[in-house]
Length: 486
Image 1 (tube, rainbow, N blue to C red):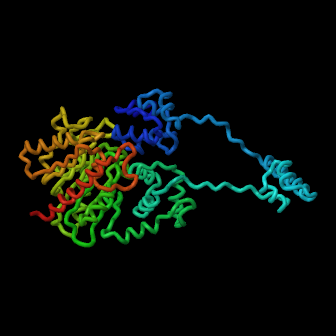
Image 2 (image 1 turned 135 degrees about the horizontal axis):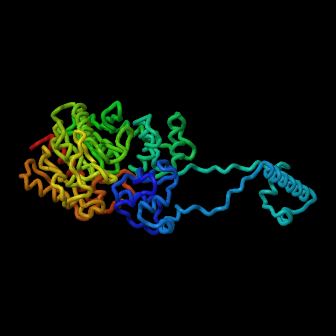
Image 3 (image 1 turned 135 degrees about the vertical axis):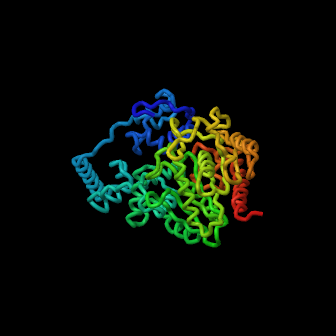
């Protein structure tokens, strides 16, 4: 993308009838493996802000004519409205004087015995105005209209949790996480008002529902501890979940996909199953790369060291679980890390080392050198060096694939990984869970996902929910059995 008029993105889906601009941007971002918030701020006026979308730049990125974009997304068209009238102090005084004269006339007519109905017809007023005029010669001051703040319904708990986990978190970072992790694009001033009020120790601002008490209760009832890790005081940006009821049966490093979000919801679920977990973000967070480009594998090695040091026993096996593009990082980390990884779980996985997002460079670095990569997904790959050597993972692999994946062919790529393992003797064994009717949302793994987690462009069908309900307990069993071998 250039600083001037941008070049078209590789994939540019057609806007749908009656679709909002927000929905279209999410589909456009997903089709090109971009974070929604990155694309949204890139197209904002001014660029990089939280302002309105520039339809000219959007038309260029989507390879469409501006009139076609404005026709499909009319909310982007400039509003043809007359300039708002500004009332001067003289206008207000003149209006008040006219009201006093009318009140005086109403009072005179009432004094001479004119009926209420006759006064209504004569002065073209309603009964309430007559009552006010008879009660006082001075018209009451005009009531100010109370407008409720823009909708934050359902998001208060998430915002409060972010502030509690990191009191210094930037409002911009909260905005980005709400957009990426919960599919909610809200007005930046509204969010700023709410966060500023909460940090000042005030009660929830008027118009905002309060969820603070519920949040505290959930924290007290949890059967695990959480620890927030932030750069630079920690080597990674993430959240550590450790069960408190018993010694963890295993520990899992959680790596999300190209959305850049931290899969903390999986960490909470695993901790509830007696498994320690560290969920991390690896780009688009403070002090991390802004895009999925040039991510050092040593960053994931540091996360494994944290898991290893935090566990009460060195006997607990460490697993790396990666989702979508995170599956590449999971397998490559298991292969190259000095900390021994006992197994890998890869959901909607890839079988090649793909390039950066946006395209144009490497996604993964090792010793500051790019790993061989290609700018496309598998299963076929013309560069043998870009195929992931899954046979080098020092333990068994669980591959969870979607047969109707609309983002990339995860089922075909899982079968390619399986075939490569068989060709190399399958040294540790592996399992493929393929769900023919499931889509990319299978990769989120939990049967019941948090509200707003899925991007709007990713459908969550009945088949997806059924597939996750089947895959999740199998994934938990796979991880637990590593700590309790038969």
